[in-house]
Structures are given as C-alpha cells and as structure tokens.
Length: 278
Image (cartoon, rainbow, N blue to C red; front, side):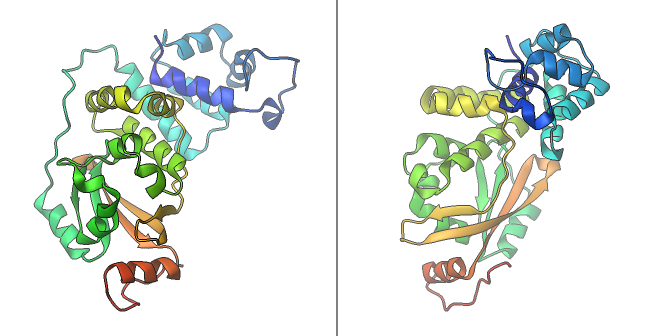
C-alpha cells in the first residue's frame, strides 16, 4: 500500500523530462519521466531505498534524504514545503487515529467582526476542507447565483467536484479543481481529510481521486468567474491564514476595471466603489 509521500515522489518523477535535468536518454522507457535509477543517483541514495519510499514500505526518511530528493527533483519552494508536510503525516500514519469525523465549524467572534468590517467587500472564511464557515454579503452576491450556498452546510470542494454548475461558473475549472484537491492535504488533521475524501470519492469519482493523488501544487493565479449575470469576472485572491483555527480568510478583489464595474452593477451602485488592483 502506498503513502502520500511515495505517491508525490513518484508523481513528480513521472512528470520530469530527463533532458531538462541533463540526464541522457538511454532509449525506450516503460513509463514516462525520470527513471528510478536516475533519481536515486541524483539524490545519492540506492534504488532499493527509493523503491521502498515510493511503495510506502519506508515511511521515515531522514531530513537529509528529504532535502536530497527535493534537490534531485528540482522542486520549488511550495513543492518542498509540501514534500516536508507529506513526510510528517506519512511518518505518523503508523499510529492509531481516532475515528474520522467532521471538522469543527466554530468561528471566533473576532473573526466574525473582521468579516463585518470587510463589508460590502467579497470575503469568505473557510477551512482547508472547503467548508464555508462565514461570509460577507458581497460573497453571497457573487456566489449565490452559482448554487454554492444552497446547501445547509456549504462546502466549496464538494461543490466544485459534484455540482455541474461549477464547471461553467469557474472559467478555469481544472485549475480550481486542482486547488481544492491539493488543499485537502493541508486539512485540520488527517482524520478530517479522510472523512471528506471518503464522502466525496463515491460521488466525485476518478476525477477527484486522480487530482488528489498527484499532489500538484497549484499556482493560484487570477480567479476567472463566468457569472450567471453575463459578466466574466477576474478576481485576485488575498488569503490570510488563521493557523490557530485551521481556517483561512480569503478576500476577493477585482483584477481590472471591467470587473470592478461589473461588481458595481451587481450591487446596483454607482461605479467607483471597488477599484481595480494594479
């Protein structure tokens, strides 16, 4: 049985074109990407040890080995952070977990007050599993027509993967889906993530599990929304991490004048209330 760490190493190895790292091509390959022997040589470890890591038979690599693999794979800062995180949770998988259960949904009064001060802007409080815990009226205006908030307990991850409206609402649905799947690895706990993935997998199908297991670190560029009103909105996302709460506050800002004007029209207000961010 594999592990998140092994899955990530294998996925990154398969995605690398050998010539980009100066590795000579020795002929036909049984699988795409970098050979296991080539990666082991670059990282200074044995092929046997790398095989055990990828197959989940070794769950506790040293810091030196993790850093060597990061260098050998040419990981950027975000990918290195994710590799270290997967090493941490993989090493703890041998211990017994409590029964998976839904994450807590409490919101501190100070956080609610922060959202109130952001009115009438577009802001939402979520956890890494995608639960919408609190939001401004501006967020309701933006997302209400999409159907996300129809559920009694809205969840953005569930919406993206199971509601057909999401595929047209998010102009770059593939990128948004990658983001939501990746964020599950950063959930409040392994147990909570297991709860949501077990719930989602039967309905979201292979489209969800494939994205979850390839560990693609998302770029998180401009969010493009094809709003049911007919406007195509381009939004910048400013994310504030509330690490002690395992929550994040996301503020959406217009990326251009056309989006700012469209949002003003949605609010039935005179243009100029929201300025584009240059």
